[in-house]
Image (cartoon, rainbow, N blue to C red; front, side):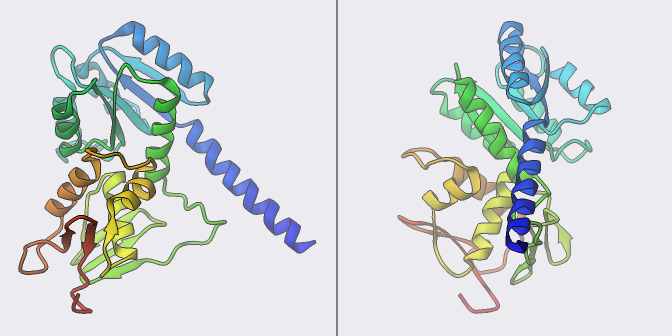
Length: 260
């Protein structure tokens, strides 16, 4: 009897988390009004609270007075393009800078994808995009940025590797006592590397566990997120970074206190 109650409570808690992700507020910034109307309608039918504006300037102005759980941001727009909007969001001068961002890029334009990720985007999707995949990508970045652990209510134990501390339940990370400003993707990658400190973690594992999708050849998403993460971490070894590249495999977080 107690076991049944226990499992019902866990299922109810997980259902509540899934519902909170689905009803998250989404802002789409894209100068294509027809596309915005189609995407917003689809997302609303799929359980999201979605709206749109047709310029970068309008998007930034709206975000000053209204909070959103995630943004869909087009790259090619007149006036402020997507890269400039993202740069302003991630500059640290705006309180809304941590909001997760999914960028829409021109099909096959790897430069836009890499620049977007380097500027702090959490994920990208090429136009024209499949709306089901768009919704799935949004749910993935929302789960990464969620402060509610999906573990039956049990708070995960904080991690400590060298001078880096990470509390997954509170979604907080610090180094030498100084808070680290990380995107959802960067936080998830750091968490996985810390959980396997001293061991190599493959790009396939990082892509699947941290970004929520399968690894594909020539997809540099993990590499760019790791590069951004390295820039935010202080040097802790002779190479100047606590994250070591393991050629042909992936990445390893060096545990300086353990000597490897």
